[in-house]
Length: 197
Image (cartoon, rainbow, N blue to C red; front, side, top):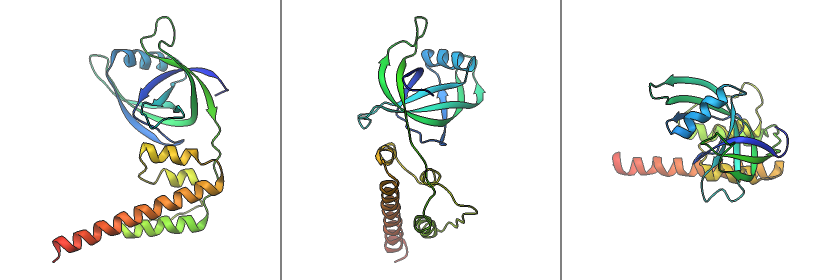
């Protein structure tokens, strides 16, 4: 995607990181039209996070991976996967003269990835152990790949994306994993206190 490109938009309370997938149910007339138009071309559109949390107008450029079900009224279930992120520079109420759905002028958000430090992987493995889940990394993975394995909310994903350096991203993920570990430990202690006494 080049800078300041015009794309089709689907505002949702959803923010996907690169490589992340989601299931969508298409039922509104305007987005049934969007789906029809997209499937004729490159199968790509933008999802803009429709939330007050999205102060930077962030969005995810997604590609339709599969149409898993079609309904008699034109509704459909689809699977999309995020290819890259963007800033929404200008919202357009109609993508073109015949469109019921919106569009926008967007600028690519350069979001470089880095190899994940072993110390951070160790923190993640400890978190999995607390959850009684074993997890072994066959090969080295990147920070983004690790982030996709964490149960991050839309707000937490935005905070992660705001981190502009390798060090700040590692620090954010380490703090988030420590937070998850603390929650798991507290839940286990509560369970033992209530049900095992």
